[in-house]
Amino acid sequence: MGLLIQSLSFAIIKFMRETIKKFNGMVVGYIEDKGDRLVATNFSGIVLGYYYKSRDVTTDFSGRVLAYGNILSALIWNQR
Image (cartoon, rainbow, N blue to C red; front, side):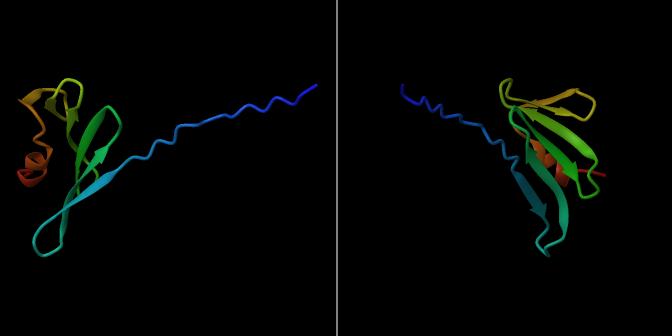
């Protein structure tokens, strides 16, 4: 009688975070990869908008479509 060894594989999901800085090194915001979407936040962590990869569309924090394509860095730079 043989011993059956099963190999289990687990997917490890690692969220990537890109820091957006001014020329002097001051952090102005972040873009985080959450798998199906990217999330733009300001320095304080307030969500500015989302980029949905499958739809190729950028929305603001409330879900209003702002542009087709990824303009999250513009949201961070143009925040008030």
